[in-house]
Image 1 (cartoon, rainbow, N blue to C red):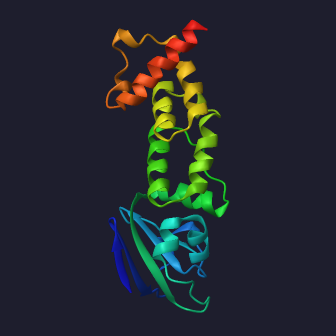
Image 2: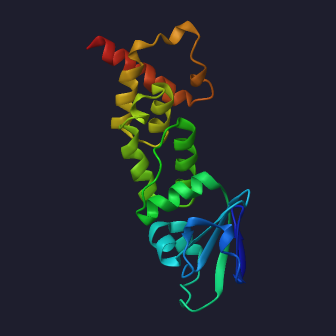
Image 3: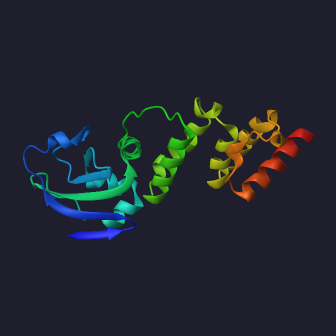
Length: 197
């Protein structure tokens, strides 16, 4: 079986002895019937069809039914996600501890991948993490934009309030470039409303 969608290809292969070294140590269960291959192909992630299908609408529609635990065949899925992004998502859907979310870039990459792979659980985890340190104390303009684009009004208001200490007209806000005009307009309205209170 081979299929392809949105830059993702799926193939069925037989894994031979000696391939364990290619797998991430936390995702190398020999009982796993799916091997996920991130962009760059440095380390692979072996997991179970059940885990992916129960946490992702994308995988639910793309993967075959689980293989028997004695089968040597696995479905190999080549993804466009970076290794670090894939690791975070897999840790989230597997109920494993994951490293602290500590950058706006990482949050945006994770959200983009989670939405693309239709993983609502990681999206909810990231949303909750936004209002906790260290993310809650990061660039409020960028965090506002992330929240606005995802329709998270309460969180967007929180970050809009944090921008009040900044003068938007001083020219030192390059992080506003390339952002949604609608989002910027809403930010200006929120700032004006807060100042009038």
